Image 1 (cartoon, one colour):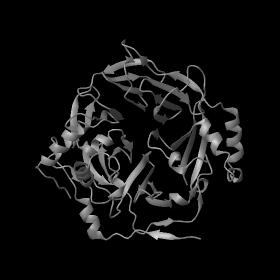
Image 2 (cartoon, rainbow, N blue to C red):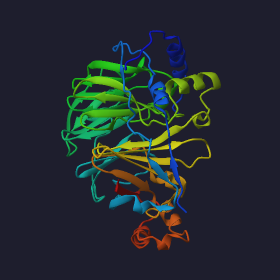
Image 3 (cartoon, rainbow, N blue to C red):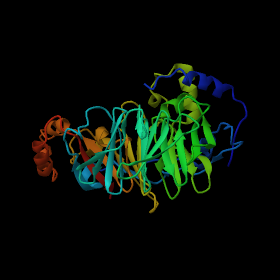
Image 4 (tube, one colour):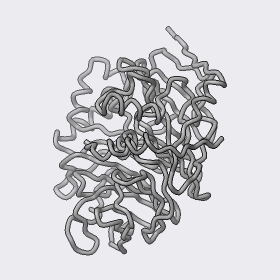
Length: 409
């Protein structure tokens, strides 16, 4: 199915609004959705200047029909396997002294960017290795660090002037002067995927010389919010770009060089891009979309497993959905019934959308929060209590965070 419309009145108005936005017992529940409703939900579109018709996938990535959501009390450790507990080494040159913007793991190393001006490299055990690049005006230096990505070819840092390429040992190789000012990047084979906040479209495809090859997804209020998202590896050469809190994502196939719009899950009342934009136009940008439909949050994917949470209203604690991509299996859990017996902090702080890994997932906990969480009366009953308590006792309150590397069972 492929649907599009040439009328751009709503899109033009939405784009004008976006330009003014500052980014600133056991109980079992079943979701029954009719085929007619699913077909209706699949029909959404808008025009893209380089695509007279962007494909719209009929099937959702996660099919909820027949999937049981257990409402029994469940320990977090029973649904995921902890691969490593990684305290990031703290020394003068590796102190993370500000807001962490992104954490990414690739092969033997972990990369942490913070304060929009520093990128640190640690090994997979948390030992500090080096800083990649630095603030300045010379070759291999940048004024601001907008985003970064890591591949076998090295580290790519997005700055205000373009993309800086370093090898895995931090040596500067060359600069890529992008034709368009990007907000984020994902290196996909011989192409670079980028997203922007102040252009006609949101998603752009560049070659390795920085020339724009393609673009899609017209700017709108929703996409201005989605600009803090990432391109997540889905399967093979495919990448997903979730659209804020809606049920929709832009999918790019790097092998075919094609875009498609997809639904993440087949829930009947899930927020759509079109509906979200209309609500923002009618009611303003400060509304909570969850009051008007089921929203999605904390999306994360590593190419083999995919996870996100859905919320039906403001009081809903959420449902955790896990899709095992290669196995074609879906798991679902009532978040209100999951006890975090791994890091003991509230569950919503365990799952994060700002950590990428090549083969697993990461969670982060600060020493102060861990020490406080371990004081809960139920904590000593967990098999993770003693090792986490010993770790917390060895850390100072200002030390770097601890990372939990995990995968779903």
